[in-house]
Image 1 (cartoon, rainbow, N blue to C red):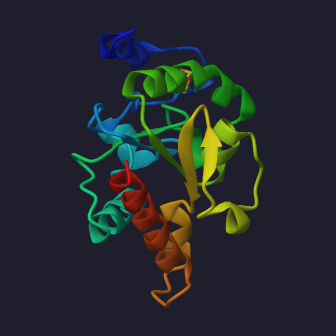
Image 2 (image 1 turned 180 degrees about the horizontal axis):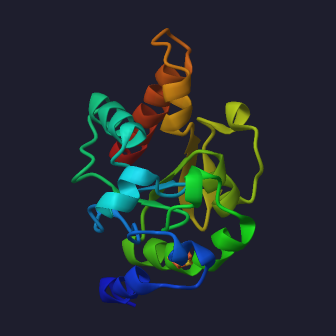
Length: 187
Ligand code: SF4
């Protein structure tokens, strides 16, 4: 398999999301990075631009990454569990997650990251098969396919809970991303 194989993802019609999308949103960042972030699905801005996490949520995520010393362009590869925008930004259906899973598996195989950050509950469910409970799960290291995996809150949740206070979701997410940076430094 090569990155070239992933180009076929751009013309995928394996689920009904292909009928309403503008573009297939595959990834941004460095495919050679040791860190991979996996989110849920593209939103409107991502569907327009073809790049994941470029709307308000993505800007907040990039800001938090930079605050802990991680460069979103060079230190990580970022993608979503589902590559096409669900209409109205609804949560992807189980069948859509299953249809798109081969693309996600290919990305994981190609990037071969040592550390994976699962951004939000849909990514946690897709990879670890654990439903809900993000308050308990975030910041708790897991092991999956011999990789270190860390669930964090989705930045859209942080935008809905914008407190900057110590112990608030944004502060906890910054702490989680700092733990990721430290884990990468330990290698
Ligand atoms: S969401 Fe995934 S499986 Fe569905 S059409 Fe897009 S790329 Fe293909």
